[in-house]
Length: 168
Length: 435
Image (cartoon, rainbow over the protein chains, first blue to last red):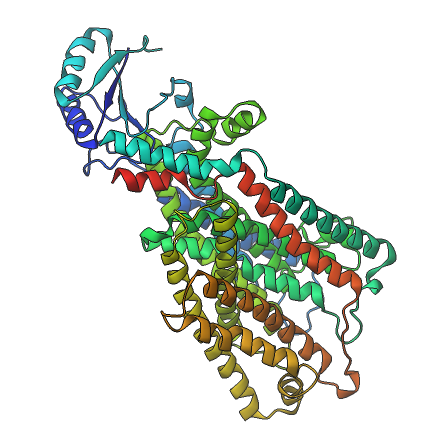
């Protein structure tokens, strides 16, 4: 079942989240919707991110691939270079750097899409149409837990609570 | 309190979304004019492809002319956006909000235009794909030692990064527009907003991504213009083979970029009636930054020229002499006036600094920086090491037409962009009002 509760300020949302967490709900079950970013207290609704790790790893992979590729191409068809080396670290450095950054940028974008759920199944969950300044909390719970959770939300300061649909 | 927030948000929406609806007569005329100029420029390019590169004024020894001047100029302008926006975002400068999107759009369009010029400059532009590293029938690969390949990788990285950097903060606005728009606009916004719902998960991912992108794009932007500088400084040509060229170009790019941003801000403020959002304080702050960059430009220019003069190398002195008292002298002194004297007079005193003076100074800086690119390229090629090879360059109507059409293209892209997307990030403004 999905419960949605409307709030007028971030403080009420924070106290609702704390109350729900005390009842055993985690960040996977709770989601907050707003038309602008809502600042919640540290560690409240913590959502771990691997964006930096993936960006750095992809950057290293892209950079090393660029070096390997340039090395391969320059040795695949050797041009006459006089006494100059066939493979030059100095000139490859620029290509290596740009590919490293390209890897990092594209990985960051892909991780944004994944972590925001824009590339996942989350899109299929009904998206709320929000009034300006309103903050909506969405809770996914079992049907038998709906009543106590609703009480909890009202106590925290929800203006209204609505039952939406059965959890798919 | 909520009513106040809603009213303010409605005002934001009303003002910032108004330009998206309908088109005034002036807008249609401007769009038509720029479209005609762009079409004329494309026609000239086709003419050049059909008749050959000989219709341009480039002759031995000046094998680089207007096209390469424009390439360096537009790549420099592209530093307006992403770099300035990234610096302001990383330093949490609160006044950045009306500036960032205008700036980021400049980057994308200027890069698209700038990147065309090496292709236009090619004698056989249809073979530009030879730059792409794939094994052809003789298993030949592009030469990765060549700065041309460096340009390709650097510009493609910067362009893709800049598009992502422009797109990411657009998503929340597109989602909101999708809820209100109908027809093809509604479909466009829905598709581009890729299912944004405004969940905390999405806001956090956006914040994280923007923060990281700002850092990365800074590093890429600096590298791009350094690589463009290395196109010159890797050559053993008089006054090009200089270690200072990398930072000199980057400083010049930021300088011209800020000027372009200020001009765009002034025009959009007037055209889109953004007087309540693009405030005098934004012009004042960026005007100070422009003045600082003007001083930095002077420092680099003096540093570069004084070492040349003191070194007294015959080949370099030929080029130096042609710039300060020879055939290129008028351009040189106009450049000094445009890049230093006028900005100094218009920007150094708080009493004189206003939207009008800052905009005038920005226009002069744009002229000055275009001349600077001209003076970097042409005198060196006109006075090579072999005195017997001296020759002068005179642009033809084809090159002038294509140059003019790129300025029209920039305006046209901007006019279309402002009709499709909000020029200012609405959600960032609302965020402020909530706080």
